[in-house]
Amino acid sequence: MAHQHPPRFLKIVDDAKSRVRETTVEEVKKRIDRGDKFILMDVREESEFAKDHLPNAIHLGKGVIERDIEARIPDLNAEMVLYCGGGFRSALAADNLQKMGYKNVISMDGGIREWREKGYPLTQK
Image 1 (spheres, rainbow, N blue to C red):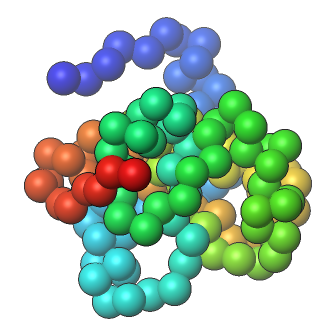
Image 2: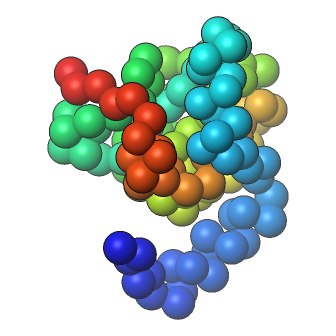
């Protein structure tokens, strides 16, 4: 069930995606299974995160990430994989984190919707 996004929103997402690194749901799952060390960050709303999220994900919503990131993740070189519902909000958040000096930020294209479709594990609070 693809959500129809408005054209101006898609324009700013496409602009952000031109500057951010993206990864796939499959690659994130492989990295988790291998035990790779990185910060997995859910940038959805608190209510979405409370419903379910990827195992070991931390939550910093798109609405507050720029304000709160420095206190939560002070290391500008920390590897972070951001995800949201489908990969749009995470791209916007990743773009802003890069503007703030974070050097190793990746957006998970497909988001939790694709993760769910593949039957990968989810957890709740």
